[in-house]
Length: 194
Image (tube, rainbow, N blue to C red; front, side, top):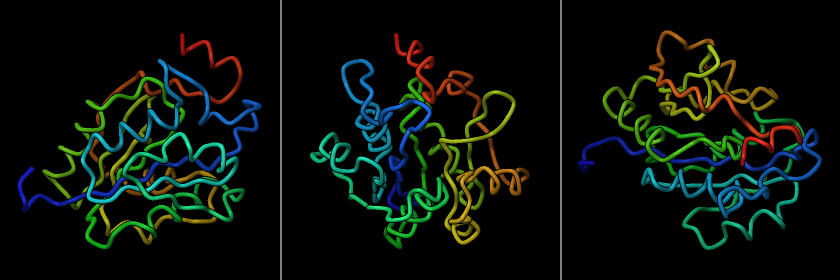
């Protein structure tokens, strides 16, 4: 990356209570590491200018999994309001010199660094556009949004950035990765980790 390339920040969302799973999904172990550590490591592999992890439920159990990594802890007091509140807390905490934000969740076990790097590369080519992942006939996270969209993110929504991605669909480049359709939400999903 050249010095003139726009810099992105990374937000790892790890605040949810995983009520359908019955235990914090952030602490589920996959390939020898917890899902939260894996997601944080993948986000950091993109070499963001700034990186934060947003915590809420079980924060004191989740944070030790990433405490040694170069990211800042952001505690979201109103995490129970949903993904929008956590996303807003993370974005608001990012350094002002981040021209975009890469948003990563903890519950996509098939996510890899190559996909995140492809999102970043596509965004750098057109930093006024968004770049999102395409799977299950829709666009979603991980996604990289330009700073000019930050104010449009609804902190009151429990849908995270989904509404914004729909509204801006004609200004989003999509990178397909059907494996990302698998996420960890209910106990039956744990079978995907084998």
